[in-house]
Length: 159
Image (cartoon, rainbow, N blue to C red; front, side, top):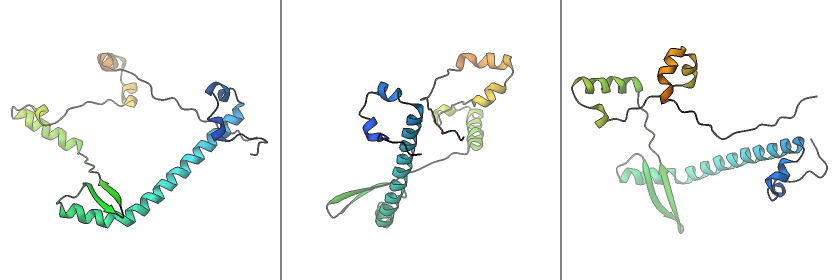
């Protein structure tokens, strides 16, 4: 859609929010499209550059980690006067059923499992909504509802 005198996003960001909020909704939809397009382009560019850096430095970083006897973590090295910080984070996942069984064995042996693990309970909102009222009432005091950041998506309607 071409709009005569269509303002640029960079120009709009210099205006007070109230002035921009008063623009026609069609203009706000176009600004939102510009932002989404910019985000997609930025993510694509970041993914591309991350691939470039991985290709250039992954082998060196892996060799340094190996020399230090570690599979993950951060290593530092120089490349032409630039310090490269290569981080390979550790991502650990635990099988919840096996953890629960282990916690029960610890408890059955007379030990306190909280000395070894953090125990947490989660109630998916979908399940909570399906509970009978008397069950919900029993849990109500433990439930706090907070809100996240509001989002608004503007979509052009097809004629």
